[in-house]
Amino acid sequence: MADQVSQKMIVKAPPAICYDVVSDFDSYHEWAPDLKEITVLARDSASRATRVRFRAAGIGRSNHYTLDYDYSKAPSELSWVQSDGDLTSRLDGAYVFEPAGEGETQVVYKLIVELKIPLPAFVKRRAESKILSTALRSLRARVESKARANSS
Image (cartoon, rainbow, N blue to C red; front, side):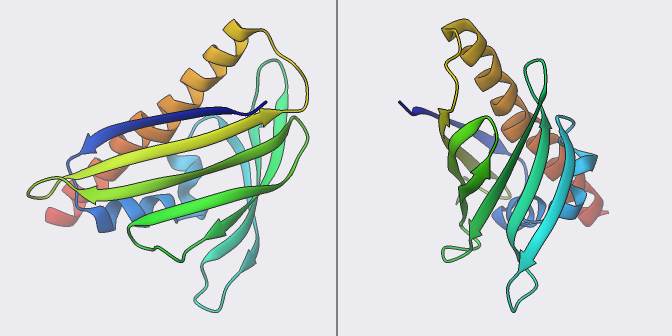
């Protein structure tokens, strides 16, 4: 059975900067420490990554998965579906960017995870917490840093 998690956070930067950061897979290593390897496998005619393979630090081992990205709602949303994974059979999600006042964005992170192997509930919760931390807190730090650099 798939687990769904969703969390939101206010970021002190406009939606465009948020979108630019999450769609720049070549720079993930600078702000997403649990991602050990990122390889863009395919790009569309606008040079946007459409298929990306990841190796992430896991619970006791690395996790490999490939995500296919959908830009149809860009720049207000970047969504993905998993096309391959060694520990997960489903890892689908989205970042949604909604203006939240002058120069701020509400970032909503949604994720649906289905594991190939059963894990105890406390291990799942720990993994979810780690994923959400990178997906939002580390993202916020990166986005706000870029926003400050752009305003200088």
